[in-house]
Length: 132
Image (cartoon, rainbow, N blue to C red; front, side, top):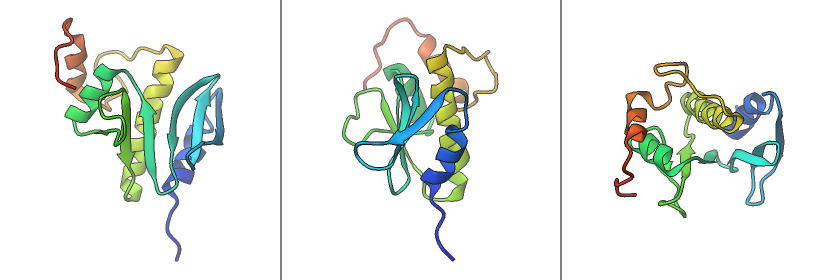
């Protein structure tokens, strides 16, 4: 019995969304693009990386939904290490959040994008005075 390739599972779902292309990523794995913009990528080994706003990165990390990127921890890059099949739906939800964000879709409060939950209220503050 072989091991499940979590990146391939995510690629099968995300790659089926309207307007998404799947291309090889320059550091290995696959990259998901919407037009010319990268939604995110999955490395060989099951680490998903996505570029979001710094505020959203802070909210997702604070809520325990993602980790700051290992090489760029103070940027908007987030990472999610998929260790089991139970992590795949969460990775897909993060990609969907970014896909919708790049398409300009604004979720209603308490809407279907419960990736962050109530922590999204952190982004409602006018001052950006949180430590990175």
